Length: 436
Image 1 (spheres, rainbow, N blue to C red):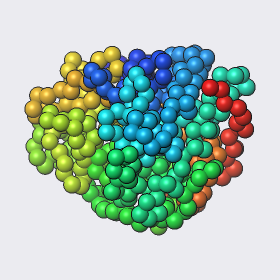
Image 2 (cartoon, rainbow, N blue to C red):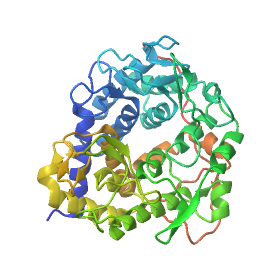
Image 3 (cartoon, rainbow, N blue to C red):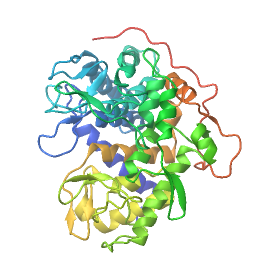
């Protein structure tokens, strides 16, 4: 049996291979999936950017190689067409959810997406902070990253209230939905609050948290969002341990602990297995967005029970920082039990359904990114340590009302990784000049 550290190395390295090989070397765009003809996903590009510093630190790629690849990506986004035309790449600093892998133009009828732009910028700001050397390639990364972030017109997406709209299409205008409840959009609001040029006001965070639903399931009390990706994506970059906004201060915990509880409840649901699906249990769990035998679905529990018997490895892998022991046991079991059906050159494929004897054929970039990055946050905290030094997230957290926890028994920390504080964060280095 592989030792734990060797298994984690294998999981992370295999996931990184996706970003090495499913990227167009000309423009830096990354395929949404390995399915033939798949478009690029800007969220996947964000995850990809953040994998490079980890690969550098682990010796899988040189710093110079990583900087060169990142430079290609950032130059593309800076120079790509911005405008109201239907075939642009973006508009007002936002980007279309899906782009043609070759041309970089809008794919099909994709929406200009606020959340996917935020996930892209998570990677952009991470590499801006990591590549801090004075040489020209790294200085260009910092300049381009700064320019991309400054260009986003966040208030433009406040259409009906202080909440941010889901997006916009040139044919029909703004989408009819705003970001509320609780989901992956924490990073969206915090980056919009932290903008040095066109920020939204703190009232937006109050509106966001006012729509939370606090519930108790399987002895876990938490802000609910059934699919686990909503509890993972913002935490890839933002270290929420031991900091609280007004909402969480009243609950006596932090968002990291909230995600831990949500993950444990998701696992407890699989153990309870109310529908009697095959193989569900303490080491076969994880409901989130994925392919299913009939289509694609953002499934989750609890609540409600949107469950057809399909398990997604990234649910456990992307929650690794919250539940390292439970996630490791699940990933080890899936690797040992289903390796011949769901493991390949890029690690775990998207999903499997033992009840229907169905196994996904494709890999998804939004699976592989959280697996690689959240395992790294659990092992070393490297993404958190770098990203939390950025002035933008410092501003965003302060404007949202976050402050360090004074004393609580419920807040959890990962052993051997010092929690970040939003106090006395060093501002990002000065940025000057953009190469085109």
